[in-house]
Length: 389
Image (cartoon, rainbow, N blue to C red; front, side, top):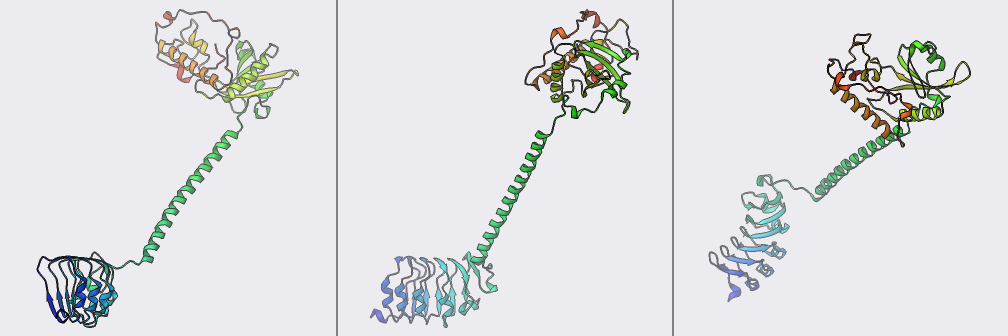
């Protein structure tokens, strides 16, 4: 009796569980309607035995899984409603091959992939696929997004990887180039020969030029006498530069060693408070004797000693006061100390001014000197020779 059942309507009930496999025994079934229940599970493959089935309604349930391939045997199907369930996967191709299928509703599922364009899918008014977020393609009337093929995805991924790799290698290349340039510059800077006061090949003033600059070491150009030599002022005839020449007395014991030590110190020392050495001269004078001298730039403000211990005359020849304020003296002492520290720090051994090399200076009454403040600060125009007292 059951095998001859043609119409089975169980819709709008509260049936739960799965659709039994024995449903396939209803081989002459024409209509099956189980919509509006809480049935779950997958569509049983045995349903394919109902090959005379024309109407299959299963909407508004909890069916899940993919649409089974055995349903392709339902050649007589005219209406298929699987909407509002949880079917997943792609829409099977056999659905577009059903010749008698007039209405297909697959809405509100989780189907994905390419929507077929043949068979019932050509009739937009008879096919319903709304709210399947991952469907694409199909007839333009469905207004679904275009499908992106796997090859296109792979190409996009490869292109993105190539772009990232290009950027990374570009940045790495720029970093290597900058690093190489910096290392080359650093190497050139380290290998650049430092002008040495004791190297004859670097000298640019001859004995004759120095002799002419101070009128043959005239006594009128004599500035002072130190333990290892005499100091003269002069004017170079070639360029008009005012200079100071420190001529060493080589007859004194240790003078040559002092000359070499001073050259070695000054070639490495750069400080704004140290007197700038222009060059050195190591030659033979016109009498055949050995001649060694250091050439400094001439400081127009005169000797620091004259400012610290001024004469009784209130002004010098140019009308400038030789009086220094307490603040000016403190600043001078700080700058001299700073220059001395810089000179000592540049050498492996310290530069020591031995007391026996310095001339004794009488002590002045500092309080009397500070009674008058000078409006002009000579410190701004002065640099200090480490050999000054």
